[in-house]
Image (cartoon, rainbow, N blue to C red; front, side, top):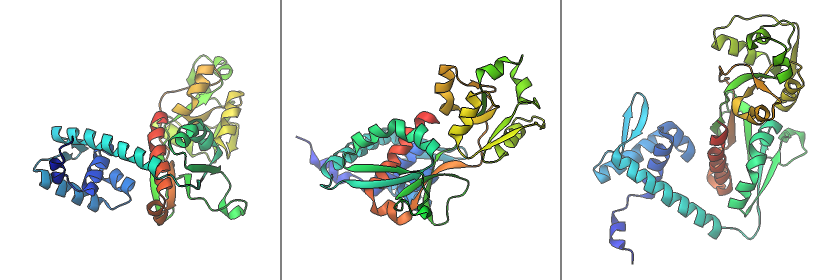
Length: 301
């Protein structure tokens, strides 16, 4: 039988939850974002926990946050325990009526990230029905979403927001186009090869600047509002475009796209998970989706 006497000495769960989040992210800022509380509240909980235990659990320095030996032991135990509790609560707390979760995102992110992994989320959360849409709420064709995954620089003021993915872009083209020149740089700076742009010309300008390369003019520029269409144009040999490196791995394996340079850059925009702050607190299904998404996105960083 378990000795329950030791449980009297357990720290409060909020402090343990705050510690686990900081230990996982190695960041007070990211932990506060996950828990939807202030950074000061997280720091206060950690301080109380360390004072209660009489041990330092985290080391703070100019490079960030690291774990002490005692902190590593506690983090492993907390992570396992919270995962076990979350899984059991998910099963026990299933409602008799299906919970509908509406997520709005662009077609590219939906097809590249969400759809290939959706079965796993539904298997882990059988009480949730997931509705994906790329229609704007103002169109009147859909009910208002619970959350959206938006490619943007700044989230709307007052919203709960957490960065999901900041891309690492590389230039790509068709193998046939690459085979037409002796070296990749001949394509990158050729006036006769079209540049493929997503929304605007910023990616090209920023990539050249980031890699200290001279800006050159081209005779053709093609602009796209959808990244799928841009990549289709690249596969067909219509020019050079940019894509997140992980999103073209399958194309590279199939021989339908080539990477012209492994020199990457990160655009100012990133994919962000957005929702009203009150929704995150009131909707456990939304929090489960966010946590699942952040875990899954690690495979495409």
